[in-house]
Image (cartoon, rainbow, N blue to C red; front, side, top):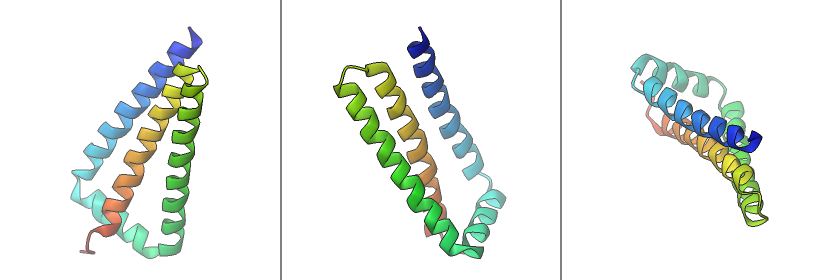
Amino acid sequence: MAEAVLLAAGIVLVVGTVALLLWRVRDPTWVRDAQLTQNASPVTSLFMLVLGTLLVALASVLGIVLIATGRGIVGWTMACLAVAGLAHVSVSVWIRRRPLP
C-alpha cells in the first residue's frame, strides 16, 4: 500500500511539475527574468544545470536498477522523479539558449 502511494505521489509530482513549467514558460516576463538571472551568475547557473543533469541520470539509473531487481513500484517512482527533473533541466537549457532581450 505504501509503495502504491509513493508511485501516485511520483506521478502527481511529474504532472504538477510539467504543468507548472508549461504555465511559467508562457509568461514572457518570467522567461526574461530567468534569462537575466542566469546571465547575472553564469558559473553558478551552469553548475546548477550540470548538477541537475547528474541527478536526473542518477535517478534514472537507480530506477532501472530497482526495476531490474524486482522493486518495480519504487523503481517506477524513481523514473517519475527523473522525468520531473528532466523537464526542469530541459526548461533551463531552453532558457539558456534563447537570445537575451
